[in-house]
Image 1 (cartoon, one colour):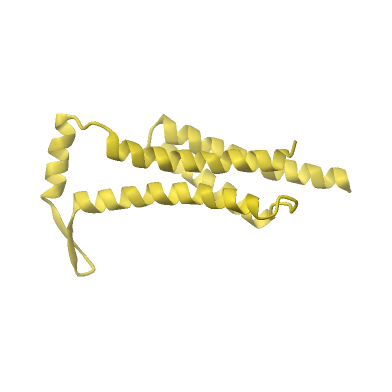
Image 2: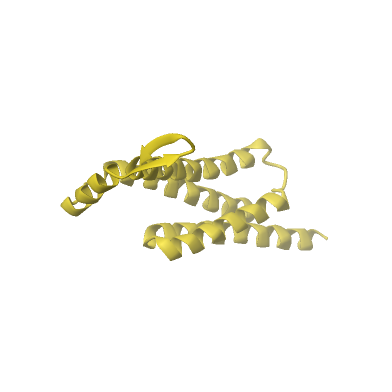
Length: 143
């Protein structure tokens, strides 16, 4: 079994799950009366952004949906990198970038969010870290 690619797949799927979960919960979660009141307040607060008028609610929704899409796409792009050529080792620069992105996402999740994104972004970080460690171990054993 190729443990380098297994860790990489785990990290990639964690991003896909977080992105999908974020979009679905944002769109499908029932809103409490307090949330409805907050939404109405946000809709009533207009802001100007580079000559365009919008509301805090619209900006928040757009930003939130874009974040979910980008998390999903980041994970999917990483899986596509794996499928390009199954015989080629994963490039170190991509592994290092994934480690940096996933640890940053884990830290931000810990600071601002709840257990699900904290856990999944930590899993992504551990998966990508495991991947680079196994890759380096395999290289040393081959030498």
